[in-house]
Amino acid sequence: MLDRLKDEVTRLGKPEWRSMLAYVSDLHERSVHDPVYPFALPWEEIGPGYFASPAFGHWDIVHQILDVLPSEPEHAANQIINDLANQTEDGLIPGSIWMKSDPPRWSKTRSHPPVWPVAVQEHYQLTGSLDLVGHSFDRLLRQIEWFENARKAEPEGYYYLDILINRSWESGVDEGVRFDNTQQGPFACIDATSHVYWLYDHASKWAELLGKRADQFRRRARTLASFIQNELFDSNTGFFHDVWAVRDPKQRHLTFEGMWPVVVGAAVAEQAERVVNDNLLNPERFFTEHPISSVAICDPKFELRCWRGPAWNSMTYWATRGCIAYGYRDAARLLVEKALDDSARQFIRSGTIWEFYHPDGGDPLALARKPQTNYNRPCPDYLGHNPLIAMARLWDSCQK
Image (cartoon, rainbow, N blue to C red; front, side, top):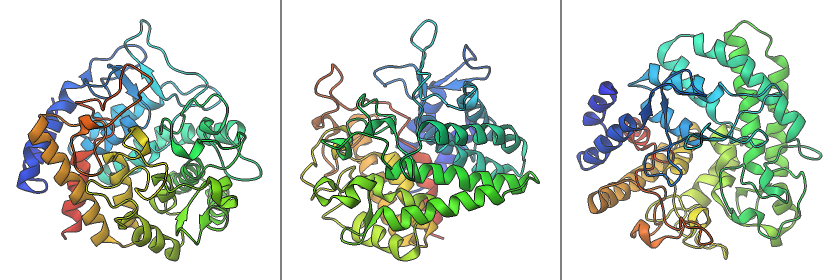
């Protein structure tokens, strides 16, 4: 079914990665299902090893799309269309859709990190077709409107529900240390604000492509970039933080979310240099044996549990893209190579890919997931946070 992807992985990256990459391509194929409510097109689940399998969506599907896109653009486009298909009238795009339920269920009030426009943009750059951009543009504008109405921070920026009392982990970073003992309220989160900046940036690009006015989107993106640069950056850490952590050092933690302004292009060059060299490449912070750790190893909140220390390959992928965008190709190569080297070692040892990895290169089964639940280990055969094929492409691109 995904024969072009299977062929591509035979030529990607280091030879010692290729058995793992072949396994990932097979896992993509095994994860594709026939159309069923609420999807009109074949849909790809997060991964058969996920404890709630089968499930679709969240930002997992974007990582899966980017993994297959160059080889399987039609399948990738189908997943984008599926992801947008259940957008509500007010603009919310659902997070995870739980397909095990009959009928399938999802939250009508909780969204997910809106990184999907990256996949649409890359589909356009690959195919030259504006069809998917045209299909997505109005949906993008509706999602922007939803963020403005439902997630606008005071006085500026945007937030995820993580900062409110219900702790529903809308950011995708369950039990993130940034929200331990913080004041609750509509305060600007570094990840949400960066992601909405990216929405406006893509709205500007697509408006121009479609012959529409882009001025208002460009102006809003510039305003958000200025806010991020001036209000969410700390010169002492050389890193970006949530607004409350910038204002109160006692609440400040070094977590990977501080890289997002570099990933989305909202940082100035000097800030990007600090993020890359002082943080992402710093072995006392995020540059672990398997980079990047989700919390800096020097942070007192670091622990070997889910998003509170372990490495997630999807975040290494985004960090690598950010490095490339600001011209740090050697840094990008180092990050993605170390992550793929250890992922391949763990694959040879265990025969699977894992939801997240030990930052010291140890056994993923030595890590905790959520001790208060019945699912307290990383899930095997988990595609959603393992864009390993896309990572190998990035590594190849850094050799040129």
